[in-house]
Amino acid sequence: MKDYIVVIGGGLAGCEATYQIAKRGINVRLYEMKPQKFSEAHSNKNFAEIVCSNSFKSNLHTNACGLLKEELRMLDSLLIKTADEVSVPAGQALAVDREKFAENITKKIENLDNVEIIRQEVGKKGITLKKLVEDGIVIVATGPLTSENLSKEIIEITGSNGLHFYDAAAPIIEKESIDMNIAFWGDRYSQEREKNEDIESWKKRIKLESEKNYINLPMNKEEYEHFWNELVNADVVELHEFEKREIFEGCMPIEVMAKRGIDTLRYGPLKPVGFTDLRTGRRPYAIVQLRQDNSEGNLWNMVGFQTNLKFGEQKRVFRLIPGLENAEFTKYGVMHRNTFINSPELLDETYNLKKENNIFFAGQITGVEGYVESISSGLISALNAIKLYKSKKENNKNHVSLEKNKVIFPKETMNGALAKYIATPNKNFQPMNANFGILPDLNEKIKDKKLKYQKLADRALIYLKNQIKL
Ligand SMILES: Cc1cc2nc3c(=O)[nH]c(=O)nc-3n(C[C@H](O)[C@H](O)[C@H](O)COP(=O)(O)OP(=O)(O)OC[C@H]3O[C@@H](n4cnc5c(N)ncnc54)[C@H](O)[C@@H]3O)c2cc1C
Image 1 (cartoon, helix red, strand yellow):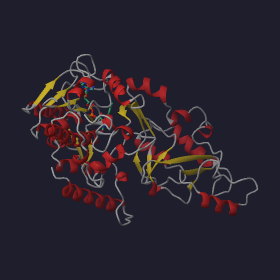
Image 2 (cartoon, helix red, strand yellow):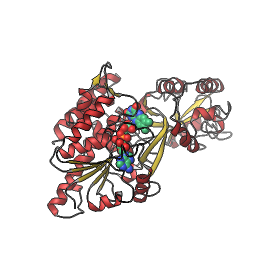
Image 3 (cartoon, rainbow, N blue to C red):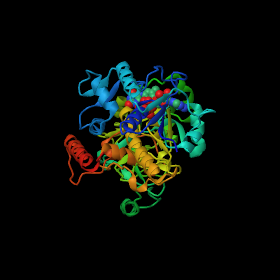
Image 4 (spheres, protein in one colour):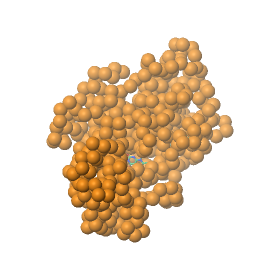
């Protein structure tokens, strides 16, 4: 076994992981393919390049990403510390001077005595992931635009179902914000009122049988036509050229499908067949279905609603659906190029690959979504890679189990909840950002959203302080 841990990718997650390992006195070998090779979105030779918005989102603790950052500050995150140092005015948000940010991180990493930097792509003859893993522990942090050569190798290791190349995610809604006086439970056909069945016995029957697989939102003709009209005229996000080619071949956004004709959605994802509207006792004109998204049942996914609408437009247009007037969107729909592995099947809560514990994944490739979320996974994977490295050294073996030594963050913290989310079985797994919906509920019911988020944040910080001793 080599006397270092390998980190592949000098992006946000890779730099955080490198720093966390090096500062604890363990050698790191960091591979970065720039400037030999750039992805379609990268152009700066420095590490930790911010490829799009320069915002790390809100600093407020009542914002999920604000809480995640505060936890990372407590954990001595190099990237959040540097972001604070090079921040530019942005109200309550943390926005950075992107050039200074990348430059400062690069200098700090280069100045670490025990870090060896190799500017070379991994995944080619010469340095393959396979060879690196034979020699010791590797953290793969190559991001949403992982090079093709390495992607091929990751598929060989994880299986053909193991890697996805783009996001086509529908919005996710907090259950509490759905109007259940309009919405109803039930599966297609089993919820439907049978011919000659009187209304009262049908209501009794579906209440008794009610299967909680789907929440259904019925629409009448007028409601549907109003919704359709706003949908086809809503503003969409401009895709990058490289994204246009790949995405539309695989999956159609709801607004593109709607533009094919006023009834197309009613024969597709909004098909009303097999349902009876509780309000009228008749088949609705159209129906929107929501599918459970997490095991706690507090997050629900809009079936078939993968979309490119701007976030503000998603809120405006989807709130026109009866029952969703006050919907709280935990996550908006997105469609973009994004390489990510099937984490619920492949990883545990430490970002460790279950079938080969010499490999950790970190960053956007794990299915966490966003700059700060990528940093979080870089930090957690590094802390666990260190534990594994030390056990191997102590036992003088290349393969040892990490079971007893894992650093698992409490699920009440935003860092822990995110790690838990991506490692929890989920047939329809899509990348996830920090949000309060993934934290366990409080013991008390609090109606005021801001107060509730404040209490969740206070609890998270206490758990982090009391339970994680580094
Ligand atoms: C176009 C685009 C826009 C985005 N906009 C935002 C946004 O506005 N806000 C937000 O929060 N998130 C955004 N994201 C998502 C995500 O937060 C960022 O991509 C973030 O940089 C992910 O961090 P990371 O460390 O996982 O990957 P990266 O920061 O991309 O780092 C990966 C590094 O690995 C290197 N690499 C790749 N393959 C290899 C290889 N085989 N060998 C060696 N090195 C390799 C790359 O050159 C890169 O430096 C965006 C993503 C994309 C693709």
